[in-house]
Image (cartoon, rainbow over all chains, first blue to last red; front, top):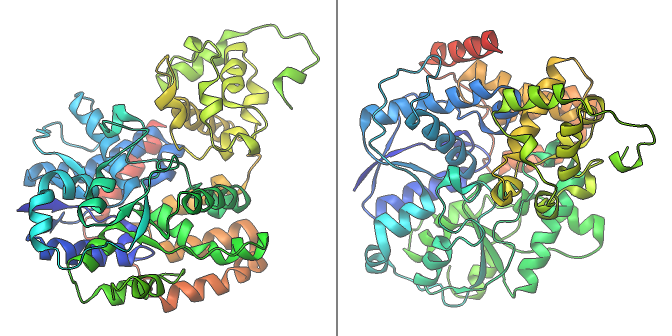
Length: 284
Length: 190
């Protein structure tokens, strides 16, 4: 299977293990990722706060490139996915966007990696390639805000209770716990501007994951991952409660399940240790 | 100040509401105060005007209260409000519009870090076509919290570096002129 690929800025930086695991997993699943030539930033959260036209045009520039290629576009970052979907709706509605050609066919789908793996690669192909079952892992799937909401943008069928990551993890044998914080907000970039607010939201999510009986949290969003993984030491220090819950990108656990040897390298990039848990359940 | 605590008599003025509606394309006047936005909002604890009250304040024309509020700057854009609004109002988009009006009128943001963050982020995109996270974080901490603030982040920065999460040298994409043209045109059109 061949698809266009929009990695987004953080996958070569703060979310490097996400980028590495997405590429490794796709190779194993015989998915050819064709990175969009000369892709640029989607505008993320800063453009829409500043200037509506800038926000749409920055994302639309990338869709214009994808449109020329014509293959489905796979996006691992939740924020990029969201901004690209906003621009797609505008382009499909025939809106004129300054600097963007008005010949937009839109004959391709934009898919977040979770939905792509579950709906397009599919359970059959996954199960065929799985080497290790994730049986010992109790986990919760954390989707965050931007692949779910609002459904008029994301086309999510169940924006308050998405399922694809749960199905995917269950198909790998993991013990997926149900919880009501799947699409709760981690505070996003408030971690830089008002860390006190973000930390309160992060702590609540970690508490709810523990209450659900999870040993770890799985996500498909670089911002969520970074906030949950990086801040645990500080939250422990501030609250006196000890937090030590490994956070995984879904592609990391999929990689472990597929027997990908480079998984060791990804796991070393975590702030909250993830190898001890995997060793305990016999996965490394 | 909470709107409910206002002691003066308010004479409703629809001019501000019309401006917000025109700029955002959202129908603020359709809000009938069901409070679903506020009940779903994860950051009301840090807001001075709850989201449904903010909508009402716009309807009443309380421009000063709205544009000087903490609310417009602490909103995390999680989009729960617009997912649940029975009248299809994109409240998060209205927050963006209010931030834009506030900045356009030169009002000092109650949360000054927020506009600094966004402008530093966008400068990096304009320069390289993609955001350089390290450059962005460095300049953001320096501009918002000075050298002491930046140095407080040294431990985290080092942690990122040894985990290979910092791309040291940002290289602009080849088609950078297209990205810069988008910025220029967007600014011209306001």
